[in-house]
Image (cartoon, rainbow, N blue to C red):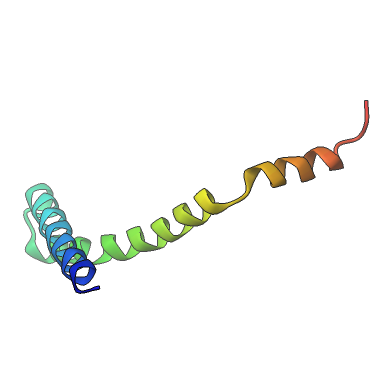
Length: 73
């Protein structure tokens, strides 16, 4: 567990540093870069949550259910 926490914190540090550096290079403003570096990981976390849910979704069952609703030809 301690290794996972350390790995998460080091990854977060790398992610924030890269995000801040790119945003600063593009805008020249440390305030805007700081805002982007803070907001982007939050939005990314929400997107990742839905990405993981989509990967766990049972698409085969969903397709079978949709085919059952199709009118017979």
